[in-house]
Each structure stands twice: as structure tokens, then as C-alpha cells.
Image (cartoon, chains in turn orange, yellow):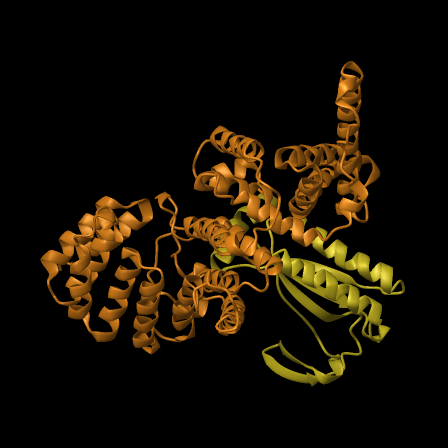
Amino acid sequence: MDTNTDTHRTIDAVWRIESPRLIAGLTRIVRDVGLAEDFAQDALVAALEQWPESGIPVNPGAWLMATAKHRAIDHFRRNTLLDRKHEELGRELGTKEMTAPDLDSALDDDVGDDLLRLVFISCHPVLSTDAQVALTLRLIGGLTTDEIARAFLVPEPTIAQRIVRAKRTLAEKRVPFEVPRRAELASRLASVLGVIYLIFNEGYSATAGDDWMRPALCEDALRLGRILAGLAPQESEVHGLVALMEIQASRSRARSGPSGEPILLFDQNRAHWDQLLIQRGLTALALAEKLSSKNLRPTKPDTERLPGQGPYALQAQIAACHARARTPAETDWPRIVTLYTTLARIAPSPVVELNRAVAVGMAFGPAAGLELVDALTADRSLQNYHLLPSVRGDLLKKLSRFDEARAEFARAASLTQNVRERTLLLQRAQACLT
Amino acid sequence: MRFMMIVKHPEKQGPPPKELMDAIAILAEEEAKAGSMLGNGGLGPTALGARVRLSGGRVTVTDGPFTEAKEVIGGYAQFELKSKEEAVESAVRFMELHKKYWPSFEGETEVRQMFDPEDFAQCAKAAPEKEAVST
């Protein structure tokens, strides 16, 4: 590899590290995400031109910021000049305010706050979920549109379009660049957490395609979660989500076999679970629990938040039950049932109910689990959810009702869009014949 | 991609100045907040350690200090990053802090990609081909 390519690859690396903070700082100054990204891109182009000659600066982040800032000043100076001409044309306007913001004082503010504002603006409810995901990965995750497109198996122009439209929407709706106020914070934070967890889940169990997992998406989501935990350290649910993702991700290595086939939780080699991630997860969970118990104090006039633990911390606790069990037999199923029951109360959903049925089946026998699953078969929202017949098949098999079990696995296989998962389900159907 | 950064230096340089430790703490906090650094640790003097060596079919234990070693491992950190270039960039930042706060420091940060079992399997598959080319 020649040195020029080397420098370009280093610039790529620097860009990924620096771009979120760069764009965040610029957005506060120019009050427009699209414009901010343009200036940041200008700085990147300047780096690509100059660094191969001059070498990488000692503080590349500061270099990029200074260059982008100059572009911003040029831009506003031009605009101010234009405005002056307009002014001369129409004197009646009277005294005109400077349109260029105070760049120097603006730049001195805490970058962390800017990044948090950028997170909130990327996940703003005026945007569709697809747009929130794309914009978050692009602006906070530092991914290229091409990388996002590949991750979600859609054509690159689709993602590019989505991002352009999202930025236009934010500008048109004049979405303020700010951290939401108390009354709004809980619901806005929930939507940020939702976007990050959606990215994680798409990586953890891909809904479509040839791969069972897309680890890069999990890593991106984890990174976003950790960033958010650093930005909003007082929010219990942020740590809850991070804990959940760290513990789930700890199993990545054990979740697929040599040729990429899925391996289910109970068949996994637990020695392959990543203990560093488990430790990080348990630490984050302890922090989430500590913060949420603080919020229980009756003196706190905070009615927006649910008392006790939020849904992510609860799911993290469930994941922790698995992480702590050295063998499947050591799993504390009654505790998992209790946790799912609490979760079903604060965040009711048929999917949670289905998971609860699995736990009940493990804790109190397959017949008890099947009873709960059968109650769910009428639920319309689960009509095409492949895990319902998959779980039902599993319970029927344990009850030695093999013909019914086989039919359920076959049905589950017909419902999943993921090739690897379909193969596994067909194998399980086949196994019921013998 | 998971990376292990291993810091190596001559042991007789003495303890790092407080200014450096403070600057490293700030960098570590930034990197943890950026979601890239998963964990780190510093190692005590080799005088408190030991080496357990297998050679010629014999396992021998030697207590520290490792006086004959030119450089010893002083600390390590684990990172989750997109590329080797990002890892190198992170190591450069770390060494720049040494340059600034401990100018007399001599040493290196070794950047190594961590492997999963399947990575080793792939390497094993790739290796014979390489040999075939070179011979």
C-alpha cells in the first residue's frame, strides 16, 4: 500500500472519530444540520487535499473544526454581503441584525451538550423511524450512506434520499437544536433509545437476508448507546439499554456455528460468551438500578417517569439471569418469569407475553407455557410473527405432540424472511419426524 | 473489530508523572464516552510477577524482576473499532500525550487485532496458500 492510500485511510479513521462532535458543534453555530454537515464535509475535503502533503496534524479534530469554522465564516460573510446589497436596495428595513452568529463564543461551549442535542434532533418525532435510524447512524455513528445502505440491504440512493429529506424536514419544521425540556424529556429519550435498540436488533437477529447476524450493526448500536450514556449519565434507562445490549452482544460469538448457522441459547458454548461485555453490562445494570431507585423518592415531582425500573433495565435483568448462569440448568427461571410479568405490566406487548410464556414453560413445565401461548394465537398482531409458531412447536415437542410440533415449525419457517433461521426451523420440523 | 493495545517500555524509567496520568485519564474517559474503549488496566512492577516458561519439554517458573528484558508491558486497553487505522490513530493520540507530558519517555504501543475462534480458522485456511506462493 502506498503512503497516499495510507494517509487516506488514516483520514477515514480520523473522520469517523471526529465527525459527530464536529457536526454537533457546527450545528449549534449555524442552526442547520444540513449546512453543518456541508461545512464538515468541506473540512474533510480540505484534509484530503492537504494532509497527504503536510502530514496528519497533531490535533486533527481541532484542525477540522478550525477549517470548517472558516468555511462557515466565509459562508455567512457572503450572505451578509448579499444581505447588505439587499439592504442598500431597500433602506426602509432600518437597522439590520448581523446574520453571522458569534462563532468564537459559540465554539467554547461544552461539546458534549452539542452531541446530545444532535442525538435528539436526529431522533426527532417529525421524522419517520427509517429517517431517524439513517440520520443517527450517519451523524452520530459517523457511517457513510453506503455503509448504512449495506447494513439495511437497501440501495444506496434510497438512504441518501432519506437523509436529504430528513435534513430538509428538520430545516422546514424549524426543529430547535436543543435538549428537550423536562416535560418532554421522557418521551423524547424513549424515542432515542428506541432508535438505538432497533439498530441493535437489526444486527442481532436480522429480519431478512442471508446472514443470521450483522455484527457491525450491533457494534454501531452499542457505540451509540455508550455515547448516550456518557452524555446523559443521570438517565437510568440509558444505562438499562446499554446493559441490555452489552449482555446480548456478549453472546454474539456463541450464537452461530462455523458456517453461520444459528445456535440457540441452550445449545451455546457458554465459554464463548464475552466476559468483558458481560461485566460491562452488569456494571451498567447496577448503575441503572441505583439511578432508578433514586427516582423513587416521593419528594421528586416527576410524574412523567414510571416508578422503579424501566423496560430496558428489566430486559437487561432478564439477560443478566442468563449471563450469570454457567449452565442452562442453573438458569433462575422463576425470577425470569417475575421479571417478564413486571415488564408485561409496564410495557405490555404480545411479544413480551410470548417471552413470558417461554419462561413459564421453563419454570413450571411446557403445559403451563402452552396455555399462555394458545391464548396469544388469536392476537392479530402476531399472525405473521414466526416466533409464535416456533415457540408453540417447541412446547408441543416437549409434550411429545410431535405431529403438531412439526406443523408449527414448518409454519414458522414459512414466515421468517431470514434464510439461516428458515433452515434451522425446517431442521427442527424434520427432527419431529424421528 | 476488537483491538488490544499493549504499552511496552523499559522498566527503569520510573513512574509516570502525575500530569501524564491526568491527561491519560481524560483521554480514557473521552474514549469510553465515545463508546470505543471497553476496558483498560495498568500492570505493577515485574518484581511482583513471574514467568512460567515451556521450553524443551520442561516447564520452569522464574520470579521477577525481569532484569534481562529490554522492554516490559506496562499496561493494556481493549477497543472496539472499525479498522486498524482507527486503532493506530488512537495509539498515536496516546503516545502524543507521552510526548507532551513525559518527553524523556521511550517506548511503544503495540496494536493487535483480537481474534475469535473463526478468525483463527480462517487464518489457518489462508496460511498454506501463502506458503505455496512463497515456495
